[in-house]
Image 1 (cartoon, rainbow, N blue to C red):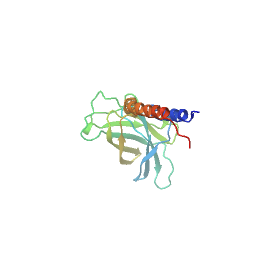
Image 2 (tube, rainbow, N blue to C red; image 1 turned 90 degrees about the vertical axis):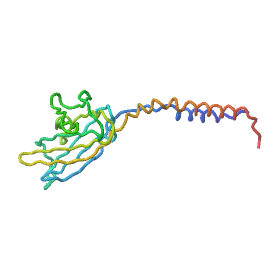
Image 3 (spheres, rainbow, N blue to C red; image 1 turned 90 degrees about the horizontal axis):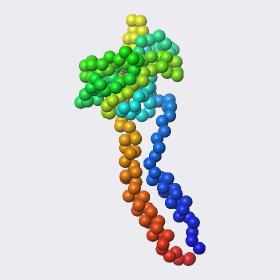
Image 4 (cartoon, rainbow, N blue to C red; image 1 turned 60 degrees about the vertical axis):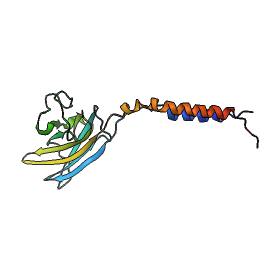
Length: 195
């Protein structure tokens, strides 16, 4: 009598060899910077994974340094500097409120205002940003409130989209699939000894 064990094993092997489907969901983000400057405490949040060519939220929580109370009436903007050695072209898309983006500054910098009303969390100043280039971007967060101002700087990594690499998975998995199927075929054809 033949064993039926190879069928579930083969099914499990095929599931792991098929290319993955990528789901995009909302994530609370990760803290990229927490900095106390002047009268402010500035905390910068981004998506866990920033990908070139895809818009991502960058959010800032601005608090009073003496009481940690959220400040809701500040002017917040981001100054983005592309990776060193990269040249940001004028037609490379950057997101932000229409008519509010300033480009062409030194080193290809772009200034994008962060607006409190764009976030589901009304304590955060948020901007939707599309990074056209991969590599480590420099992010300066500028905060102004009355006569007080502060500048906090951090580096944020921007990677290639995973789908570009995932498109190669079927081509890389096909030889492995053929070898696996051949091994299963040979195992099924071999006479099994009773013990």
